[in-house]
Figure 1 (cartoon, rainbow, N blue to C red):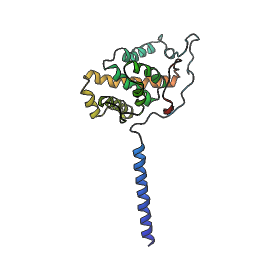
Figure 2: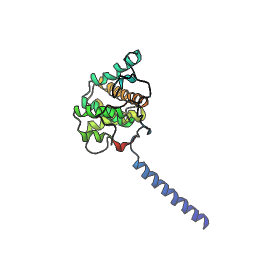
Figure 3: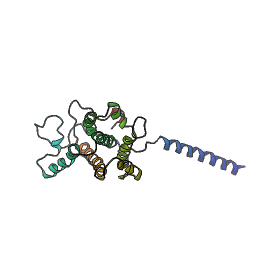
Figure 4: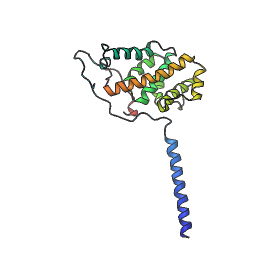
Length: 208
């Protein structure tokens, strides 16, 4: 009888653990943001006295070859991207959200609206591809950003869906845009880039 009771207890406990794991798995988001950290309230490096407010560029001065080349590279995707501007902004905003890029979010909240995204759509970026309201191709863009963030790889189904609308050059561009803004978030977060007055950073419910 004791053995029977022990066996029943094991089955019950095992079943409870399995149910709990299933519930927990169902509650987990498809992709996780980077680990939380406390955003810096001031730049970490010494800046000239006359740089004014929001001196992001002075964190890597144009006077050095390294920074000059970096700004040429990162600015290219704003000035010269060939995918539609609205598509680009979905990729950038999702990357900013996942990377906790406060400065990027603040700037591209504004640029995204200029590109045709509504304030509601920009807020919805934080919820990802699977919430109601997105068109099929918008979901594909969000999934591309998520996959590059989570595994550094665009899955075959997502790549095929992008290829229905984009040229091969533009497919490369998608990967480089997400990679660029991931790196830019590292730079701005670590060096303490401060948003100028009048710009809002990441939504408060996301935390830092």
